[in-house]
Amino acid sequence: MASKKGLNNTNLKQENRGLILKEIATGECSTRIDLAKKTGLSKMSVSNIISEFMERGIICEQETEKTEGQGRNPISLCITARAPKIIGLNIHRTECVAVLSNLQLQVQRIARTPLTDDNSGDFYPLIFRLMDEVMVEEEWSNILGIGVGSSGPLDIKRGIILNPPDFHGLHDLEIITALWEHYHRPVYMDSQYNCAALAEKYYGMGKSFHDLLFVGIARGIGSGIISDDKIFHSVNGFTSELGHVSVAWNGNHCSCGNRGCLETYAGSEVIRKRLVQVTGEDKSFREFCEEAARAVDQKSGTERALQIQEIYSDMMEKLACAITSAVNMLNAEAVIIGHAGCNIPDYYLRRLEELINAQKLSANYRHVRVCKPYFREEAHILGCACAVLSKIFEGKEDFYLS
Image (cartoon, helix red, strand yellow):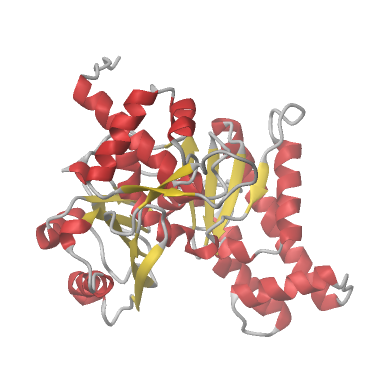
């Protein structure tokens, strides 16, 4: 049994700073009174931390718009324009994206480049160029850190991208070491879906939930788990892989070596190919989703519409099979369907919600909500900055005050 470690005064102060910053940056609290009520800290403790933030140019005070009646206008606490920034780096099998973000997860600058068999041999120079591009007119001394979100599998403890499938022959990339040696700023890595889950928890649709599951549907299917308001990590540093939960024990062969994996039935590319086969048209997954939505709105009963409906309905059934198992294990309050899954018509996501709630163990006692992310298809990209922010908000790092 692991022993508990006590917190000294420095650790407690660090946690309190992170908590106050989180409440302001995510828009949960905007006054000292609200902060004291929400955090349970004394008014004096809150004021001391706010004063320190103000001295360092992180927080400022401003009057809100004039209100009716007498009395002073309330004073709101805001993140300043000159407050430190974060760089997020998303590494996917088809492209790399770098973003410069502020503490409110608002994009200041973004740069993208395809990742292909032709340029993958220059992987590190490629990502350095991307990051330098978003750093135009910004000082590295004002960067809190670099957050990396990537396709998996990953070893996040050692900061290594292991061997993602269809990854242009790239494997065992020591990404944290490479970025630290090049930029000399703190670097943190997580799966792109854990990053997306954090973005939604702090700033988006997950704010009101303590336990949630983010499901990213793309060529593969990834997952991020929030449990008791924190991202879930196993002790060995590996991340969750919902896409490799089997929904048919003797089913389709998967690139991972197993059979019946969810992503072989419900990945966006698998669904797109099925739709191409029945329609004879080579369209994108997004375009097919738009057509499916129109068919629902128009209550179309054509043979083509019925064939498309059958494919999407089967997709929801397969997703429900795996997600219900995850909900039963995790007691998730909500499921957020992201990445290319944002394009799935609402009609089918409502059907997915119905299936999960009908099949889950506690069917009569609580309702699990299924929704799209606030940040839509960019959740996994913007969320990369949250790999850094989570360390600060949870009081595990205090480098923004160094």
